[in-house]
Length: 302
Image (cartoon, rainbow, N blue to C red):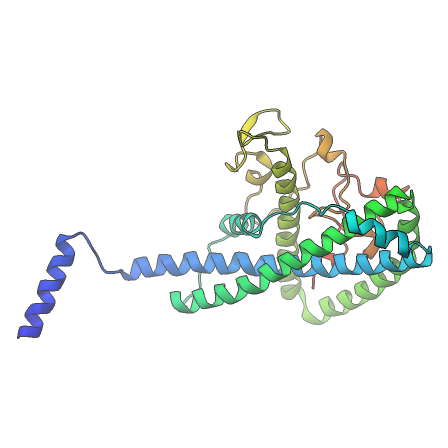
């Protein structure tokens, strides 16, 4: 009896203090929130992995080209003083991924406990954050080598040189992708298309966020394409908020940013790795932001 009375006394004190024990509804909400966090990390992983592979491939190609042109010593001297490229923080990238997850149908891990979900989140985050850091380093190297070749007025020549390698790579991967699609069927293709839509969303939104980050002034405000001043972290700019559900629109056009190049950005289609679009005149034209990027299947899958 004593133990039973003591239990009621403790519970009564907790209620008097306004402290409640978690309900099943609260636990379900917590699990769903954690499920969204895990899903955001998972689509980051599917996106950053291919980006890292392509950046490393580009670096290998550029290194081979520089070697063929007997410029290795000049490149070694150049990179010692070359500035590091600006990068988005992992937190900024994750925030956009989580937003993407929240615009899709609710994510639920039926039967998964909060502790198990948190364990998966911790492990996945460590892996993705490592990939994110590695991509930042590889992307910096790519942009430094691009700047070096541009300073030698040889970037367009490199892109022409890369066609031999990119055409072979693209043809081989396309044949592999076609065989997989045929073997796996329409259902698997539908899932693959969903992943590709998520990847394009993240790459183009990370690219946009990188641009907006560069526009911030000392007051924390930026000037958007519509010339209205908005708080930089408010997500009031239309590029992010215009994306709903699983639909993926092309990058908005207009303004100096979109007259630039996709080359070296988070949404880089890596034409020198996978082949340039038909009808392009040179690398600058092919990478123009006024034209939505065209992604080879290999650019959107590991």
